[in-house]
Image (tube, rainbow, N blue to C red; front, side, top):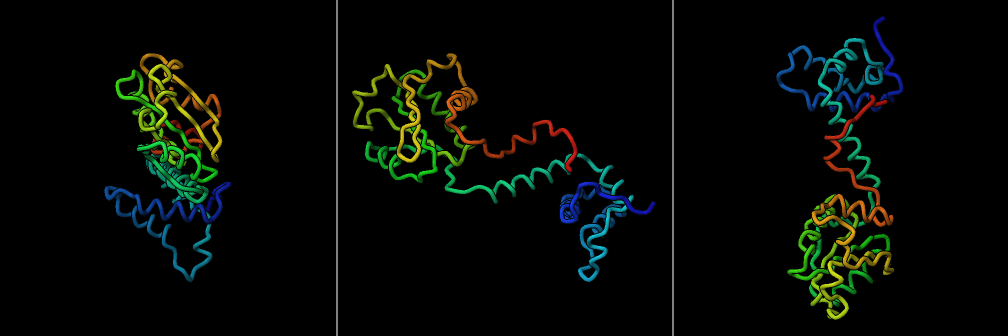
Length: 227
């Protein structure tokens, strides 16, 4: 048997895998294997039959013998490319400091109607405000399509409404509409809390989108084979 079917693997995917394998191959791989990978990834343009051929047993065994980490990197690259194609709208990836009440109103009223806006109202010296700021810094990188902002209660021009008793406060808006109004939000957390706690709290109310693909996926168990 000289050839083997790459079950459930479209020809384009096989060729993409061959090219990726060549690009990522370690220079410590024996010369004969590198040459085989080069032949697998760079077929002659005038030889369509060779380009679209089935995987040979030799190719199949080579792929099976190679380190699993290369396949994981290939999966990650494919997922990133797919995510980029499907991602729409602005990306923020940081927490914006609002300097005035006007800036506060502007971000609520003028942001894109599909953009979720999370505003942290804080005050220096109030317990939990600094910790919540750090949590939002982290979440801003995990949810780049969400616009995270913060504003000092005094800068809002309505400090009488935001006394230290109701801080830190989290307000969530979309298309100018208030979706969530959480005063003294840290009362929902333990004394020591982390970004994952804030994330879980917002998710409990359905106030966060699907999490963006991140490098953290490398640390998760990627059970099963790529079909």
